[in-house]
Image (cartoon, rainbow, N blue to C red; front, top):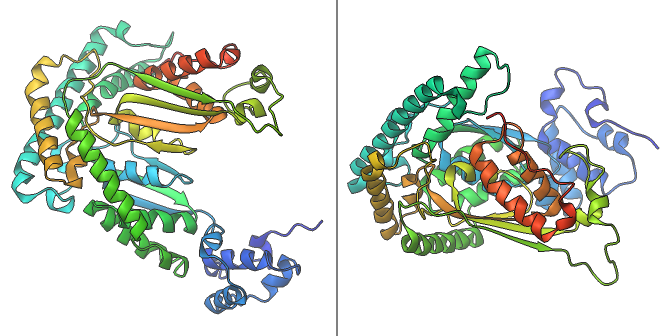
Length: 448
């Protein structure tokens, strides 16, 4: 066996490194799959002084599929500053094989200055003043409730789950997060944030194609900007990233379905929690599962441990009737399986610590605004939502991934509302798979 590191054969000089582009890496590995020469022999034929000619020569050797080659480019990082929370959510929904981060609501500016221009996101001109006014009132409500809850936490520390012997700095941070995490449901979904994503050229091409096919103008603007950047690194592979009919048609149908369901269920009145979990343990008759659930789970020291085949082969679909957008943003980032939501407003969630009474007029006006945008068939209705807007959300995956998510989102430091949602899903899972009861741990989400 001979192991060759691509980065060190031939040994790169400082001048060489910038020339080893993602496309050159992909083309060399592609040629490697069609040869028994070994990597060293292939690299010896690469002209680092003229990498483009080397790439073209390799790719013309045989008809490689661009998708399979794009996946060999390695991680290509793109950071998008000043995009709406909706667009950040959408990118994570689309990019299911990406790694990434988004600015936390605990750290970004919460005032009208941090909104996109109505014209940039497709808000109709005649509704723009009304949209800006309602969004400004949402920020004002957020600020008022944050201040009140912060003061309440200082005078009544027993409201928070505080670690024993917490140092003053830790106690102050927990009190701040207590207030922020409960006030955030007033935050507009249009609020500008920052997002960074790392994925291969193959997945970037698919992401950009999808964004370019959406009805929202912000998505198409982002597609063009991302494409321009990636054309510098993988020009041949990003040629396959334009809008495409099947993506556009599915986006059109998704929007139409969301508008129908959204108008039927549009409300500011919050819904009671409902959870739905479906477990499928079926296996082929010629390959039955012989391992017990207990044996599949009992060897894990924590959620990062390996589950056995009895759990890895089990399918789980779980759904909530009223996932607030605040929680949807993060739960949507669990990459495995399929996530689905109409992204509507079937009620607005506010935590028990907030009295709805003083905010009823605002909630009514915001709901009417969303309804008006929906009646016009505008995809810009998403920019009228707030983080408290409730929507159905479904996630289908495998049981080992579900167990990881449930233990993570109820574990130490988990947001209180995550813990409520995932705790309910986990309890229903255990009801259907009672053998897992002693081996799957629902956490207490302490401290916040």
